[in-house]
Length: 441
Image (cartoon, rainbow, N blue to C red):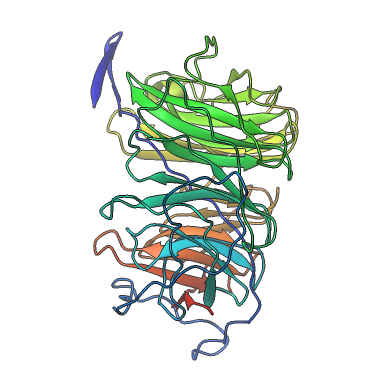
């Protein structure tokens, strides 16, 4: 923690932590049987998550997977998991009742496997790309990625911890649900090899995508690279980095989200943790090569709100060029407690904003009307954030994915015990039941 003096007031700033964003998606086909508690699944126990049963598992050689001829990696690929092994998932994204993707393994701290389900997350096929396994058995590899639909995905691996990279990373691509994978040309990290932590991916269509990579932090800066592909992931160009002169100031402050509406127009959200008195987003209209900061107006009736609260922007969502939303999360300057939360909507690229308070937590919107506020209390809106209905409460932290207004899944974790479980709701978040997924044949 660093202390800054500004006028008569002491302002505190939390050093920027590096974020690893995981994102995925894929296929499913056998429906989940209803729970014994009638038409509604039984809620999770309020004391803690149920522990996952222990077991001994072995690995088997991976099935045949076609890799690009340019794959010259010397190390053997990550071995696929044995059928019927019980899985611990660390990320999930579902596309309908049956189909979805996940990351996971035999334990939360094991090397990530790429998994796909066709039966509503009851079982997952291990379709991990031919990524070389870690050289050191004491290290693990973490996967991050983007899942466009039930068949197409982009995945990359990195060593956990953001350590220096010994060779240029690549990105794997599949358009057949993981049956075959091709690899990209190596990403250029020249001059920035000392720290490497992948951040969020964003795609506007099958050909145009972006990857934000954190490459260092210090003095209230979150240094990052931005890569762009225009050919579906075969090649990635370095379009923005801290070695190139830039007047936007975007390398400062923690980067919290990335979104693109089309091949040109994108947003980056960020949190300065009180270093500045503004709350803003960064906008690009040339595919990410240049950026400008756009300050958000304070909430209506609170003209000096940003002078007494630390506020950052999160969860950017672009529905089309110039039409989008961001979440504003604030802390009170006087006691560092959580303050209010707001949703900002614009229909003219930020010239004007509609601002609505929301209950707090992570924000997830399926479209411009239907969304959730996801904390220990779960709220849903069906009118774009103007009104919210509390659906229920949970005692765990979650990474959520919703298919529609009722069907959702979450990776639920208990921070006190370290337990992790996959849970499902058919009531929009009112009640949850535990699913114990296994590796399918």
